[in-house]
Length: 202
Image 1 (cartoon, rainbow, N blue to C red):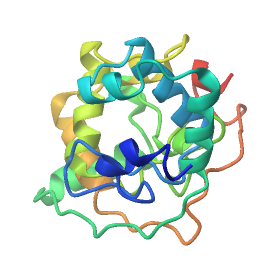
Image 2: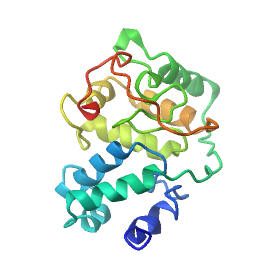
Image 3: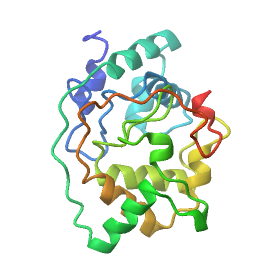
Image 4: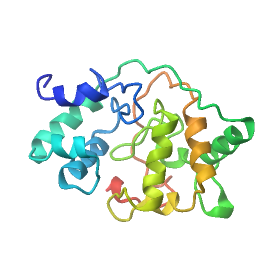
């Protein structure tokens, strides 16, 4: 397996811990189902980032599943937090959206699906802890503008289009300042708790 993932660790770190480059997020410890779905999306072109598209272009499902399972088992230390330089009002807005949502805009709390510890939920919802503010903001923006998709019903698309640019930056800034929990493992599936139907949890 170490030989198989050499193409992955060049960018994502030896154990999937991520790197200081905002394009290469932490993938260690994320739900195997989520990682597998992303690898398939890159392979099939429904998620676009040319280096990733090229890397997995001809890999079969079973091979991608083994890679996903491998990184899902990793528990490397988290990188130091990154200060996004946000002011108090921005951080307060970010905290509110993550922990309570915005009922007036129809935005549920991030923790409702991504977990109280922001470590994700099996089988298909990723952890947010340990991601850099710039990466979080970039991905939310891609959901907003339609560059990123998930299985229908695409719950993230429904949420992201309700976020303003200020909201996106606030969420990224606040999440980037959070300490990782002692146990970074994803939570067990809990469909009852989720505010929206989500195709990634099927």
